[in-house]
Amino acid sequence: MAPLADTLEAKRRRTRQDYPFHLEYRTRWSDNDMYAHLNNSIYAFLFDSIINTYLITHCGLDPYNSSNSNKDKNKSQSDTPPHNQIGLVVSSYCDYFASVSFPDVLDLGLRVTRLGSSSVTYEVGVFRRGEEAVKAVGGFTHVFVERDSMRPAKNKGMDEKIRKGLERLLNQPSSLSSSNDKSAKL
Image (cartoon, rainbow, N blue to C red; front, top):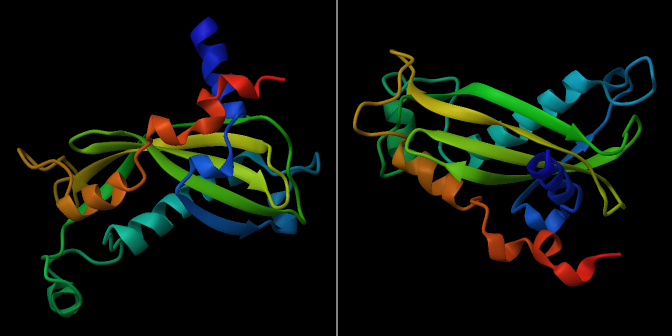
């Protein structure tokens, strides 16, 4: 049980600086559940939104087009050929530390905690605007597969443009001052 408690305590100490990419989300009335806080399913929506925003804007992911139908469009925008990979969610989690609800404005932070040959594990921190304490930490693991076969690319792994974009989010222990700073104990 101790390793789980340590992991939860480390997550509870996360700060905005632990996440290299941020996205604002304005909660909606319909996000609340009958207990007047954000419904659990909305957290999955938030994680999916920030991760896919990053993949589309920084990794060249084009979820609407395959490489065959998108060749001419991408040719003028980039020197690299388009890829035909998509990410499939194979696991997900969320640890809740405090409630948020409408009309809160949230700051979502994103980082990568593990980068394999065809898989990546993301972590998302949820913060309320104007508050430093993290409200929830969660994320999921993607396995990148070829769109046509729904299998990882043999001997290739993840597309290089996706990998390079994700490497910029890779968790660097030295940047986690809040979770490594022993003098910060209360």
